[in-house]
Image (cartoon, rainbow, N blue to C red; front, side, top):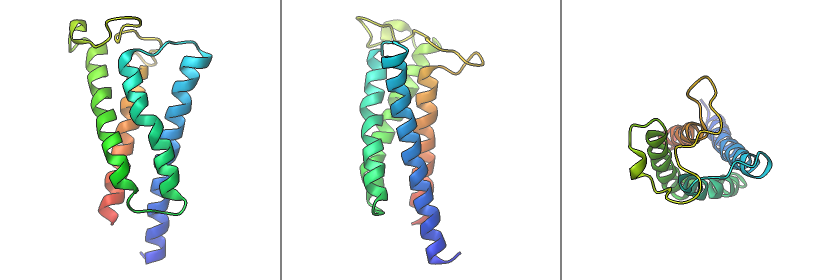
Length: 142
């Protein structure tokens, strides 16, 4: 693979990270502002880590900046941890008493459930996992 093809492939992977972050951001805004599903505390934390990624990845794309990985990785890692914890709560692996959602919407509330297991926290976990995998591939390619 030539150096230019390698650069194009890396840029394309970074572009897909931006697409995932944008779809996640717009999807969460759609669910809360259009569908009127109020976010729980853990959903807010996951948003805190996802929303800046849409901007970070865009700034890293135009022009391409290989340092974008340093800025994005902490957000992806912490967001992934919150998403895992939220899924464990939703699937009753961790008891609801260990939930930070003491007022308002319970963290175990399931507004959507596609195929019997895809919930909003599962979508968040999938998004953060995909971002982590893509960032790992980009880092390995140098």
